[in-house]
Length: 139
Picture (cartoon, rainbow, N blue to C red):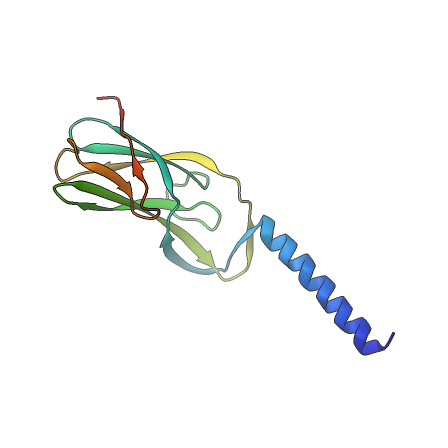
């Protein structure tokens, strides 16, 4: 086996190991800026009062402000006479140095205030296009 072939095999082995590690960790780079990206799909909604929806989803660990491994979430809401579309957004702090983050999902919820009561309108996830039934909430 030539030295060039050994070097190529070593690089391929290292590349495969790097892909394996990347499959288990999300990596954030360290620039100190908050990056907004597409949020998770959501899977439940409850009405809480006249105009508040409580949207349920699986996300990162809870944080008061964005951190490299603890994103915060917000919602974009589009309302029409026939439907309400809720799209979640993720906000993560990126840093200059690489940071390894686990990919453990945590049950989360986000309160969304509507301009008018949901009533009989269809509720849709803006990311997936799925329609969702709405449960009765706390008020």
